[in-house]
Length: 173
Image 1 (cartoon, rainbow, N blue to C red):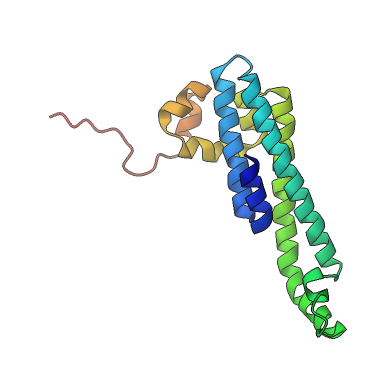
Image 2 (cartoon, rainbow, N blue to C red; image 1 turned 120 degrees about the vertical axis):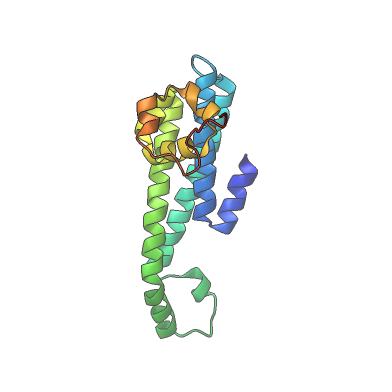
């Protein structure tokens, strides 16, 4: 819930944000399976969480943009640092900040995709088409009985090789 989102904004953790988004995605897949349109209340809850996450990501991107303008608030607050020190530190951090920005923008795009999908009350196959990376992970990580009812046919599941030790061998003589 909002608690998870709050924690992320403090941690500034992109991994945490990714896991939160993946969690919402998973629950969306389950919700859509259970009813014709999915449980309306559950859908609204997921939508609210997705919007919270979007706001967090947007504010993180704004923070990064300010930082990249060379106005690192953290450094500015240290009065004993000279202007040159600040410039040097900012230059050192720029590649890291660029990498962080790209990752955040991708997360934001995925969050917006899920938000729009949830507004439309998508079928699981739509979620699969819109967010293939997340779907792939959902399929790989979900127990088979969770995945089977979602309309994934044998062809789709056989295109990814089974992990070792999952082939069915008869134990009977």
